[in-house]
Image (cartoon, rainbow, N blue to C red; front, side, top):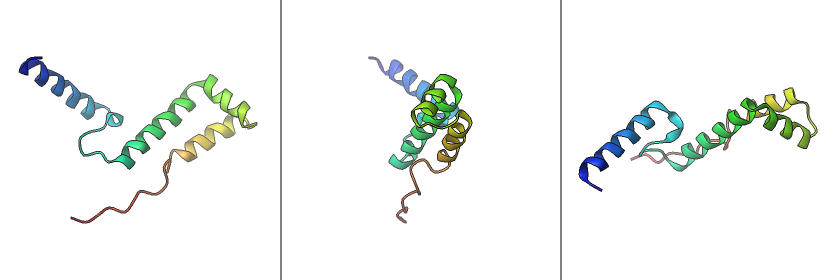
Length: 87
C-alpha cells in the first residue's frame, strides 16, 4: 500500500464520519458508541414493518404500542451517561 492510497482511505473515512453521525470518530467514547448502535437498531426496527410485526407478536403487544416502546427506548438506550472526569 502506498502513501497516497493510505491518504485517500483516511480522507474517505473522515468524509463518512462527517456525513454520518453513527460512523464515529477518534474522540468517541465507548458509551457514545453504544448509544449510536442502540439507536440505529431501534430506528431500523421501527422502519422495517416485518421486523416490527415480529417483535409485536413475540411480546404480545400491538404494533403501535411496540413502535411507541421503541421510540421511548431511543431516549436513553444505555441508561444515564457515566460521569466525566475533569482534566
